[in-house]
Length: 349
Ligand code: G3H
Ligand code: 13P
Ligand code: ZN
Image 1 (cartoon, rainbow, N blue to C red):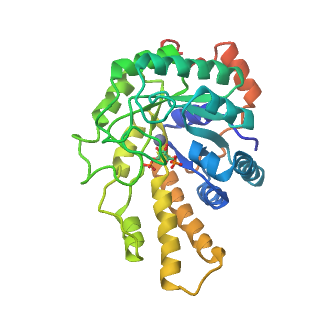
Image 2 (cartoon, rainbow, N blue to C red; image 1 turned 30 degrees about the vertical axis):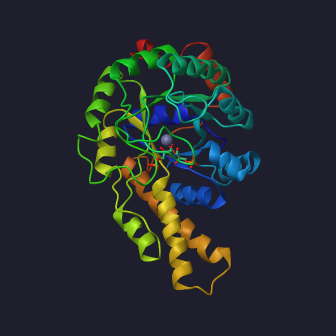
């Protein structure tokens, strides 16, 4: 199957009232792990690459691997998404490669660290929307700022510093025309999100629900949504790792989000932990091993297991065959004639 637009995938998820995991990739084994899980659970998939991933893997290697995944899995819809684009040019270059979706994270300035103003965010996101929609490509925007720093990206601090204001979310969605909206509700990127199981004082599901009430037709996105399970932390630490105790986003809170408009759920850290734990275990228990396949194969399997669990928990399992891909050129026509215009004021259709 050709790569599909993320918009189609999320529209279908809204119809079916389920969420779709968006899993970060940097290399072949991670892409294979996601596809193994998708085949096993019969799930549509969103694969996403950060700027760091694109630099690490080199653009063409990574994109050709995704094309290989699409060719080898003709029955599975796959959207290829730029995660946390920091500028118009980053999004443009992803579109030039063939990505079917981009995130313009205008919540931060181009340095990927400094929170931007609302007007700056609207301006750059609107420009990306115009450019991407002309080409049939989906756009995710972000309003509010997550906590934490990953690979130099992020404002730092706790997730509570820039929680999304529901009024601003409505204005942002209307003025930009984004297809999907990432909101800040107290989560952070990386392993260290909460220092105990989060309650409503730190994980603001009430804000999410308020935004969904105001924007019932907008596809909401939860970033920083790894659950950081204790079992995965324990494996890393049992075999020489030094993770400090930490808590992620409980699956039941993500499921509450999915019942309230969340259609895309970003997960990276859980897969990192699963792979690192598996690699550590081989190297620690079998120090004579030196063939990378001896640890990359268990690492790939460990990631596939986590991804399959998330696909089931988010509800996307079983939905791969529900629909035929709409060509990107058709999506472009839909944006041009207004039938795909996602602005909230038009969405009661
Ligand atoms: O946005 C955060 C993702 O986990 C990607 O992280 O920038 O280290 O690749 P990265
Ligand atoms: P985690 O660090 O919680 O996996 O979040 C990933 C993410 O939001 C990628 O954009
Ligand atoms: Zn993110």
